[in-house]
Image (cartoon, rainbow, N blue to C red; front, side):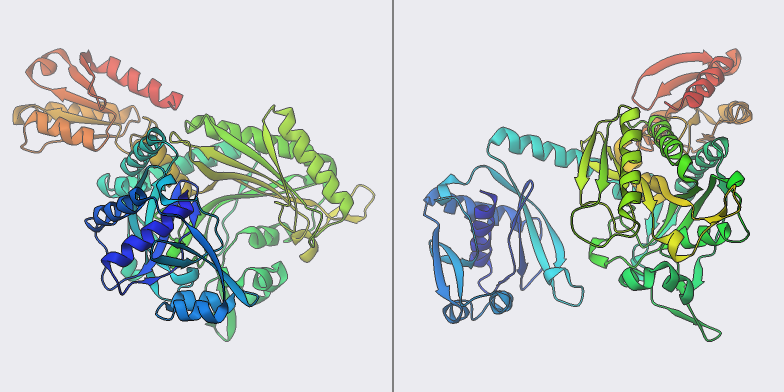
Length: 566
């Protein structure tokens, strides 16, 4: 159904733009899209016209007819369609399949519905740019997205979900709440943190550090660049070079920006001889890395080129592995609860039957069993991802599920049989022999940028009190109340709360509205009565009015709420 709708959309676009060049038009999970090379940029006003032409074609109820023709015949049919000619040239065999409905014909394997009248309710959603075949060196086409479901009720539910997702879009909220910005002209995919956004990030990072120190992790800092020899030894230049920034020549030596922190943590481990008595060694870093993502996939905070991983690497003995993995899972559950995520999905990625893997079969069997037992010991339902392991070890991936039901990659707990071997890591065993430690890569939040983007959308910008950059704002009714407002703010600050005073010469209701738009949890309105009674009238960002409360009660309430992280 969705594939058929894509063909009908392409026909409609050709009617509006006879000179249009057609790309491809596949179905996707919630609908369909088609890429076009058009004489002008599309606007939102174009979509209703295209939709109307599509509905006329659906109403005509003409059949979809499959044809098989020679490559030569196909090239004649698509002589004025360069993108189709490119695809025809690459197809194997001497013949190609086409689908025709009415006068429109497209290069296609199918399948389709029997007639256009069988296409169910649909809606064109948006227009976006897309490079031809995902290659940034190729032309930028215009991609029209459509949604399609079997019933009108399903379509309406999906459209409501899209509307809510748009309302929660972290890029829009980032601008409105003055949290961060991007400046494409000076470097796409690089985040500029504004004071309020930097404060939220600092609160999360402080919590992260505190909890790591409580669990026996040691904090480290490592360089942002390293010589080519480091990346040759780690294997990144063999397997990951296309995602690394170009080399830099410094004093005749080749350096690279780091795409990962692990080789640096390994150097700290290797800085001296390690004894079995020291293990496990848990090194943790909020380490900023740089990856040359394609510009077409950059997406706000969720896909960037410079980001800070909440990275840790555990070096341990074989008899410590199970306990360390269970400790990582317990740590993960603590973080999820603290940040308000109740729903998540666990994936256990193991090796497949084919492919090259570092480490022995016995090591893989042990590691996979340990991961499985640790997950089951915590009664965590999981999905087995056979073949999902990377070549250097099995892993546990955990994806958060936000309030809109979307999955986001977050926690990863990853065995590594490769790097300890490449860097010849050892520890001195009780018998004096040199043994190789096991190495576990571990990230709880993934990256600060991505996690903050997910958190922002999950809460719609209305952070819980402990994360809110401004927890309360004091609003004086008139200028004569400004001094008292400052005193109220100072009393809250002394209790460790983040408070501002709105001293603008605006009406009280305008100040309250602005505070609600900024999603500030508490508004404390002060006037003559509040000054006399040592109180403030409390309003919540939800609109609820709690009335006047003594300042001591307000401080107690806010401190308790913030400490509960709710």
